[in-house]
Amino acid sequence: MFAKLTAPFANKPNDFTRLISNSISFASTRTKEYLVFKDPEGKFQPSPQTLTQVFLMNYITQSVNLDLTDTFSCTSMTPEQRILLGADWVWAILKKPTKNPKIQIAVQVLHLPEREEAEERAAARKPISESIQMAQMESRNKNVYERMVDFCTSIGKDCYALFLFFGKRDDKVQGISIHPLE
Image (cartoon, rainbow, N blue to C red; front, top):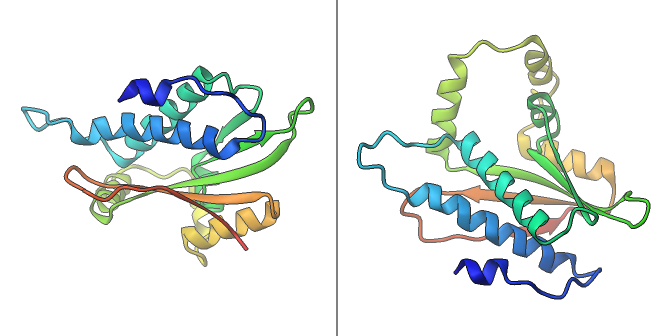
């Protein structure tokens, strides 16, 4: 299975969809390994944030393996930026030789409600920094999806939103879609 995901292919300069799909497929497969692992003691239960970071780490690894470092960049958002902008990270397809963004993809990872509720309960026990409180106050009138749309709209017509849905152990349906915001 992994041989397919890591198989070399002709690196066509304008075939961004295929390049992104390859890296997403690789990262999704690796992240799913964490979801299906059955700990005999039942102690291994990765948090939604951990799964998000595992996905991103594997996406970046695959991008490096495909030698896309001159073509793609990834900007991970700070906790405050996540709250204000609604994105977990932004991928950019770069113009050569300037390395200015040609296309940007704002990515938001969504978890099933039971995972989100568990994360919210854990977060409620932690002290919140002043900058996080300010970001929450600033963004209180819009939900995370509206903030993501506003963020992409502010970038322009070359910004796309990608929502990654993470499931739970025995989910049968899986999929990824990229939608331009109009």
